[in-house]
Length: 130
Image (cartoon, rainbow, N blue to C red; front, side, top):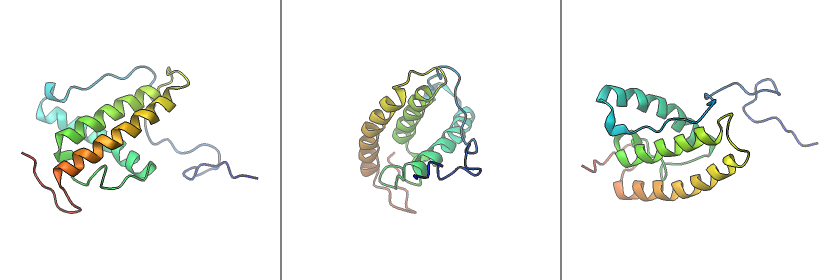
């Protein structure tokens, strides 16, 4: 018999909730329209999801370096990916949306790798692109 319990399920039936599941379409975030303080707040919320994403999909620094929050191109890409993920897993989403999200995720990983390569950051070493 195959063990069907997800690795993170503490009671063997329902995993502990980690992230909020949207009940409807999420709202896009235009970073430039917010103050620095508002951006910090949104970035903290995004960081929670990015930490989950990196762990869940075993992404390494080639896709999401430690200093990703210091690179607007990575913030924008990850924010858009998070928005698409929220929409794909919203309770109102169509059944094929999670598959569509994974296809978008494949394309996003290529772009993330390109952005990280351009930045030239290494583990423990941030390089400013400005």
